[in-house]
Image (cartoon, rainbow, N blue to C red; front, side, top):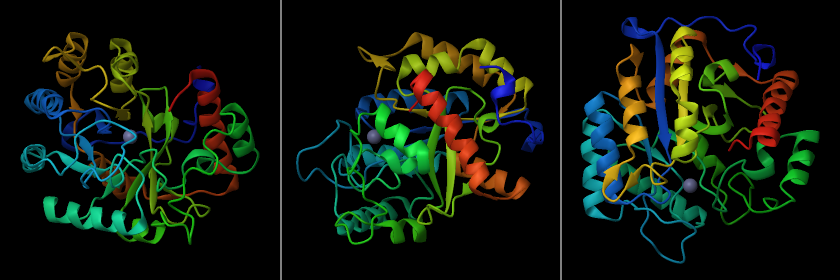
Length: 318
Ligand SMILES: [Zn+2]
């Protein structure tokens, strides 16, 4: 995609803290992630100097799950998360559990999160539960929603209800009260800020989320490594940009008790560069202090949504 297709025309260069030349972080969804994988990946990231965000499920397993992966009910896993948090990593929210929950269960999950980690979460990313908020077709507006329903064959219609008042899974008011940042659009470019220079942004059509952020595609290890290939790392630094990677460290990063060697090499290369490697909330808070929050109007919303729809159609981004 050429630069004429990006949304960067009005972008100002950001002066990063500590003389850093770019920013890089990750929001990692816990799907499929064992305690062993968590230990291996995060010990490695920590040793390299990265301080990123790990999404968690606070609740225990109460019924059939829609995904594998540890929950905070495992005391060993929890203790490791607390250790990570003490070491400068951020704990994020990936909804209450790896299964759809009621409003009361989501509230219980946030209480547990606070008990385990000292405060309710600042940042979240939706899991595909019934209580996912503004998810599926609700990620988009007007004709773009119709196109989304067409290309997804309507599979995600009437599945997500976090913002639907009166639904048993509704928790929009609770989300607004506690959570500052929620992820929506994922783009294929490594420089998330170049694709969406307005983040964090508020959307008056989606009032139960205070601020939204975007991310760069890295669903599983192959996509992560593609986005982080050497020339893209170089470009991120040249552009003085910011990358928020979307990934699942449970998918393809560890095999037979060993880290994926390509992941190891790519992260070592990135760590050697002069980047600002802080958790998602710290990065987004900094962006707000530097350039404020953008409130979407119809034209800006249309640009952001159309851009993502294009990527979804032709690049299959998340
Ligand atoms: Zn998930």
